[in-house]
Length: 328
Image 1 (tube, rainbow, N blue to C red):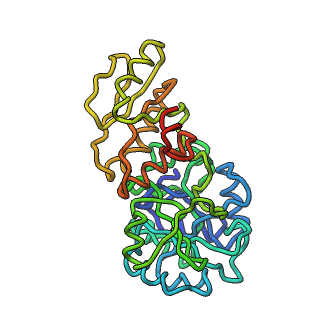
Image 2 (tube, rainbow, N blue to C red):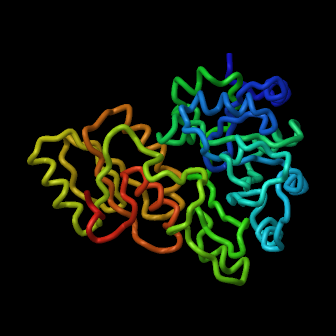
């Protein structure tokens, strides 16, 4: 029986080089001892993850940051005081003894201190960093509950810690502090504007920046069915178009819209926090229904929606929300 709440057992498994699925406030992670290259390699195999793709190292105390990073800039401490434990991952220059398998061969390391009580208890009992990408098959939906854990990941894990449904629902914001100017690599619930206010300075975006980072591939977080992102003013027309084609379609919207009885319709309240919390679980539910196409009403632009829109564009293989590719 892999489901357990036994932190001591999970710690012993990590110490022996095993894999543990554990909850964070964002999504479930698949964790291994970050100082054990063989254990970290097992994550690559379980997820079918490409080589040279970096991991986030989860830590249980702020002081542990000094075991993994070096030449830590002052900006780090401003962000740590404000956001740790929590929804922020920081990319720093890696310490000399951090293995390249963690960094994807780069000279950096990504660190996060999660706030989920089960994650923190596990990390503090283990006493060292746990490398933990999302507990998904590479490129597919991140699980926000154990109900949505794939059979392959379930079979690969030596222990599974149940923490209920993840409160936040999309992955952390990633900020690079390893260069002269801070840069947002992956948006999340913490927006670019919030990071700017916290630091009191300019913060760059990831556009045109050549660094590999978790969740940075063009196609990621994807369900099995292709996604069609549709602006609100085009939603009714697109639904009618697919009805004429007699396609098996699912619709996710925040608008109250008439949907044919043969369609599956899921409503998400028009709030960024609700979209973040429900997005992956809703898409996982639709995976089980197996529609031919999923039509999604595109949420509005704006700082609070950056993380959700990033996940939608990556899941639908759209690189940017330009007028020419906003509905494909």
